Length: 326
Image (tube, rainbow, N blue to C red):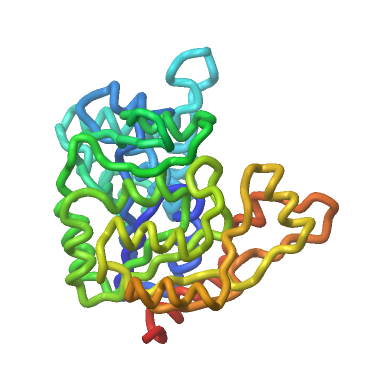
């Protein structure tokens, strides 16, 4: 089976780990609109999009342990913009500047660390994310997501509009299944899906498209969202017919767990059987499963664990969504 996973962040990494044993070929598609942190440095080096997430995935899933450790080494902190930047970033950018192709330089890194996952940026064009908040003027920078705001994000778009990476379109067309990984909706998921050509391709491919709902809300982005709200927002962005199946957690949280999440600014993304009507209206099939990780009994459960999908349950859920959903 050839599977394509789209997304960014911890939700993407967890999904890769879950489905990797199920597939013969795995392609990962990440957004490239970020302009903060390591991506700010990459974009200062030349006319490159934000490749930080792509480089992280390649390093993380390299099977040559020695080479991966080397590429993950960072320079000692000297109070410069280069502090804590992995060697892989400098090596890849040097190769890109010398040869003029970021994709070729990334392929070289894959070969060096023996990464068997094909990692692609959603687009190789330089662009930013345009964020519209609740009652605020649009802001052209992903730094918006790192600051506190009084209103929630209402919409994101890419500025300027860009065309999807041709390699991504080809991967989607040949995929047996496409999985939209859970994550921060406006900063991680939607920017990966918005380049021109991706929505149209998802509507036309033979492979089933599965959207995994998040377990908990992201402060400032999905406050008060239910699981179906999360899926519906992605479905509306892509258009009817792009998503075939929603994989949603059906187990709740205890009072203690909800309080622990509340201290971190999150709440559970609830699901009720009546929410099936929303999915039916969107033309999206439903697969429900107990997807959340069980937290060890303690006075204050770890909020990060509470918001992380269980790897085995996620693997089984993806299998069900791909093979068994109507």
